Image 1 (cartoon, rainbow, N blue to C red):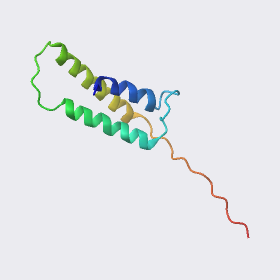
Image 2: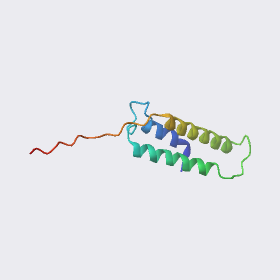
Image 3: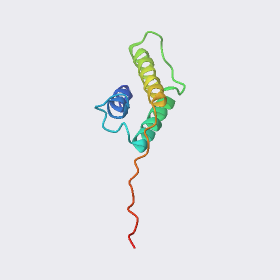
Image 4: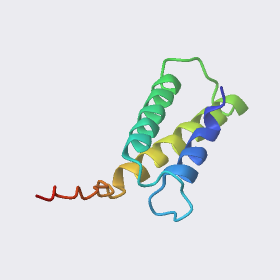
Length: 92
């Protein structure tokens, strides 16, 4: 469980502004990515004893920041048009 890598992984694969992103136009994958970000953020935001300036606390804050940034970037991205295929009309 290493949530600090989730934002980078998802943006590498889902970011619609990145022509190399393999799943940028896949609405289902984008939905799953958004759900994953929300779940990990919810887990990080649970009450937890942290000491300011502690390396673990700083890492958790940086991770939460990167996850929120990724969430905002995906939310602001245009939704791709659904792919439709023409169905040939039956010939009489």
